[in-house]
Length: 174
Image (cartoon, rainbow, N blue to C red; front, side, top):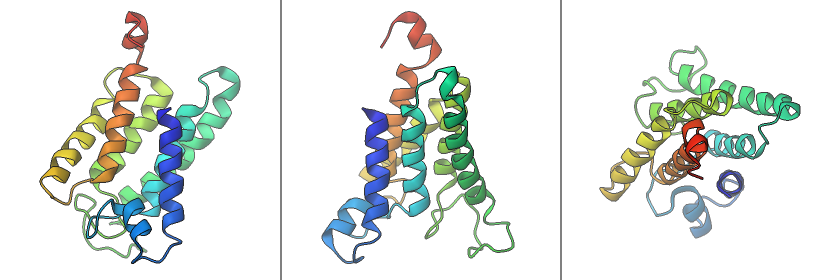
């Protein structure tokens, strides 16, 4: 269910960018409230890719599909991470800040951790999106420009990763 929610969220935000930016539906889908930080195409695409990757069965004959989705995700996040130092970057500030059109470092690291987890299934990688989601939710409550509505999606991803980690499977905690 969580992978389907990620796919739907990503697709809805990508679709919302085709709407007039002043419309209430655009605001609801991209930032949840008027004046909030909007989720951009790169982040929406990345959430949809994560959902597709988590939806892909973990069997050997699906490995090529999973690797292809992960490579696209890694490429997108690698470009975002390196964009402040690439010669064609439109932004002069570091990825540590929330810049218009640029994902934060926490967002990039969370997507990279999810990509690594889908391949290696280590027990601790859920902490990265979990911390980003938790900090973003706290920031959202305090109206700080943190991850905002991406925080809830990262919290869901972290919960999914924890529930599907090797130690959870071994203990039967599904």
